[in-house]
Image (cartoon, rainbow, N blue to C red):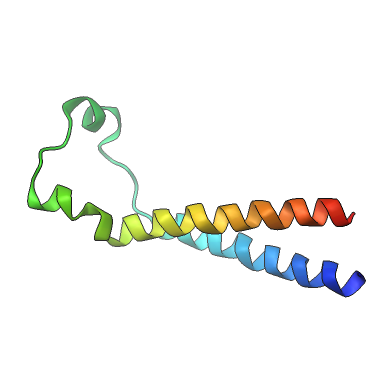
Length: 79
């Protein structure tokens, strides 16, 4: 049981570092509120936005964050 907690803790540490790196590599949202009000035109760039590096990093941040949360809950249950 003790080695399981150590393995999960190491995995949680790695997930935390991955989240930090993914957030730091993302570019800032410079458009802010003005971009949300003005809207985005349906252009070639807007349609392929999901394939950009920022979109992949945002998706990775969500998945790694979910894994981090699950590992945290497992550690809490193991006590």
